[in-house]
Amino acid sequence: MNHIIDFSRNGQSLTINVGDTLTVKLQGDYSTGRAMTAWTFGDRFEFQPVLSLGTMEVSNALRRMEFSAQAVGAGMIALHEYYVLGIPGPSNVARRFRVEIKVV
Image 1 (cartoon, rainbow, N blue to C red):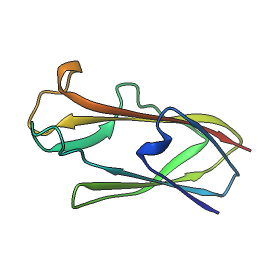
Image 2: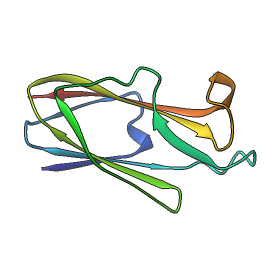
Image 3: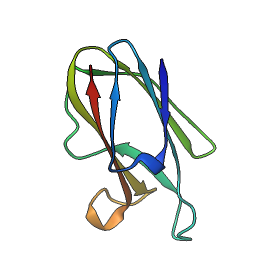
Image 4: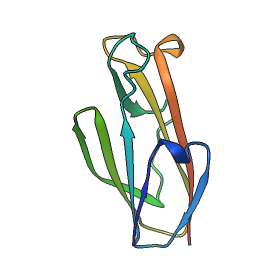
């Protein structure tokens, strides 16, 4: 089964099955008027044996990432949205996205 989530799931948890796919779609935020933004993995990105990143695409400021559930356990997808051409750091983070994933 393919689960599709977006920014409305920020801060929540999701339970999926081994073999399922998880598609994360995050739209860049241009409402600030400050600058264009881009999503990147959070500060503590690390290997998680329960999730595997397959494809990653960007089109018209929409970032689409597809993960597959590889093993039973728990993991997290944590992403930061930075202002383009800004130095990565706390003052240039526009938004944060975090979802806890439980694979059964």
